[in-house]
Length: 133
Image 1 (cartoon, rainbow, N blue to C red):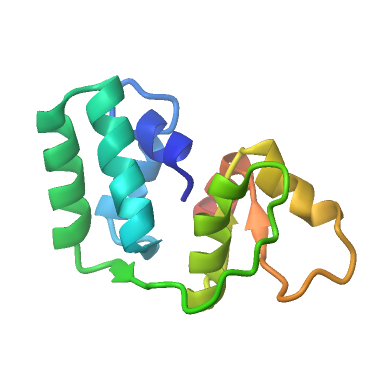
Image 2 (cartoon, rainbow, N blue to C red):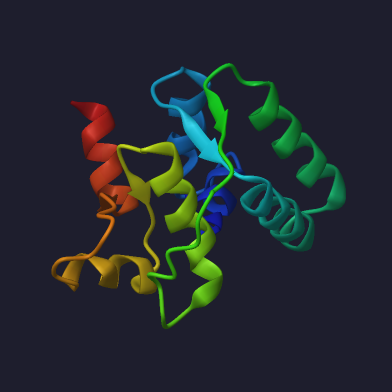
């Protein structure tokens, strides 16, 4: 999950609140690395508050359906926004079913033929449809 998705799922009236609810119901496993977690903390504290950042990360890390995965290699697939590579590398290392993002830099990877290693990427709308099946 990219950071924007997390941020939109935090408020009770957030546009992606369904994501938090599905995670709380154990409908999927949320994969994070230390680098991703630090970005979550930084951005949640910036947009909400340090207390909210502490609460969100505590809930995420306490959930039985989270997975900590540190990337063991940097594939450097996202050229236009290298900061997004942390999500791609973590998804690859974890063998994730989906990298969920609405970020155009990550979604642009879908247009690259013969990308190695391949990363299954979907938007949040597509992920919601997958969960509803």
